[in-house]
Image 1 (cartoon, rainbow, N blue to C red):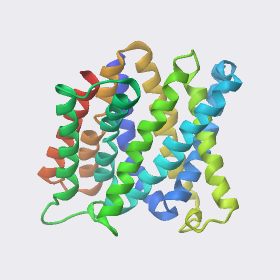
Image 2: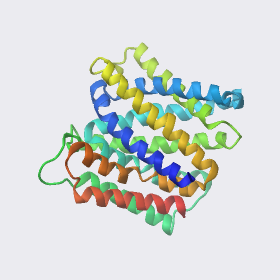
Image 3: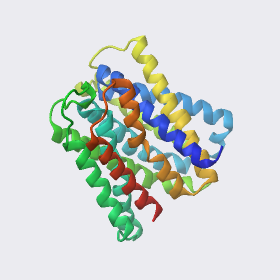
Length: 295
């Protein structure tokens, strides 16, 4: 299997995992769901790094930058993403999250003196245009509860953009470490463990927002485990191998097709065809991301 197919497989798994997240995230609440998911994935990645010998590549000076990356990109970013998903569903939250490509480009301008012009500027415009089309234009007729807006749309948009920004910041912090022959799986385990410990601290302090909305049960726990396994243990491993054998820009482009892949999945799950605006918005967002990462 070529690296192109590995990246596409990861995007497909991320699409499936986003749909699996809806029920447990709304049952437990965004904070409790993130905490349980991070606990499961921390164990999975730690064991995998132990089996592959990845922990041997970790030195003391790597822990802090990866931990900070995890606190920003996972603790804040993932929690904000699930909070957004609870309000506007997996499709629109996923499209808002795709703005991380634009934020990464802006961070590159600020931190690495890169430029945003030509195709990269066009790509940024397309991403934001696609998000606006998909978020603000609603279909007429029958709609599924995943397409309903629960609470303030403005808060949902702010949470989605926060998640995208945190993803970009977490990647920027982790990138210099990953270039030093550090095992990506062990590094990801550190990020996940740091995020889980932060969530655990909130629970110990009895912060109200960190408490579960409903108690955990075996059905919800099974969804959490499956989601973590598909999205992180398998999906991220496929991406690591794709990056090992392929070009970064191509892998990023192919793995960013999740917003498009999730549309037929939503159609299959809900039996309701997404509105034309959903297809147009997803296509614009992916096309814009492609221009950004490939130019």
